[in-house]
Image (tube, rainbow, N blue to C red; front, side, top):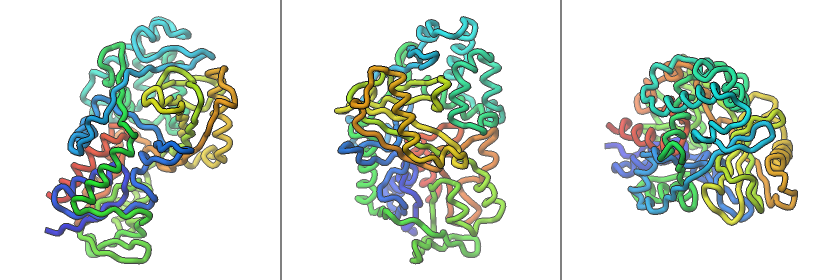
Length: 428
């Protein structure tokens, strides 16, 4: 049994692949371009606070994530919190996220509220996504909720997340997002979300230690220059001019990087990977002396704000100061993505002060922007039909990223689940 297998990328999916391989008796070597493990879940030093660059939370339905915590002896470090949602609309902050809030919502007719609520309720009850796979999302939602509810409650979420891609998204993909949050409720009126003591870093470092303890290796700041293919099978890797032999390679890097790193794939497969579109993100994180609102999640519909919402993280996970994430999702080719960080930082200061006028400049302790070019795949109708299978027609090669567990949205639990299954398949 050949035990040396290369894994590209040390995000949650790559770590899950290596974790499973190492526990099954193999000696995987993980190659990561960054100086830390975690990808989009990695932490950074935010003026003395170690915290994720991009926000994360956990739902009670995140079974694969919870299973790994159990295996690593970390289950006791999960905390579940009853959280609140809000909606900033017509210059007022309103409660959101349960039937009473919907009924009391100002700025919407009763019929629109009823149609919106029925759609959300039935979406959480639906299990079969296949009928929605080839359906366009905005048309599907509008048929259910009507133009009024769509314009007030949905339009800005689409416009400021997907821009020019809004009108060609899969209804199955959007439905899975509605369902995930809906199923985080333990009653119609109460939402429960979770966080890990120490944040995602607690899990990432425990997985890293486990991989190494079981014979695996993780090489940071080691971007793979090229995956070497000869006569239809894997020969090895070129890592910065140094060739290493491998019989199997499992890539979890974002699909847009694949044509550059694995240029010898069959042409039709390269074209499929090149056709994948992604949304980028500029995620602003703010450290404040006081809270902005009491909500964890705040949707926004404001003509002066080019964001779909913000996440007040410390209303889920208590810390010494108040932490707010404000993500600007933008197609990477859009001119706005090229704007300097300062433009986004200035906007966020303005937005937060508008939502909570009692905030002053002195309340802003620190503010920082992180960028990720391939933050989220854009899943159009029939998305998986246009991707090659993860097991490519090259002996010993598997390629996948977060888009492969469509229609589920990207998440730590989904990445862990898919990564472990891919490891099992690669060694079957």
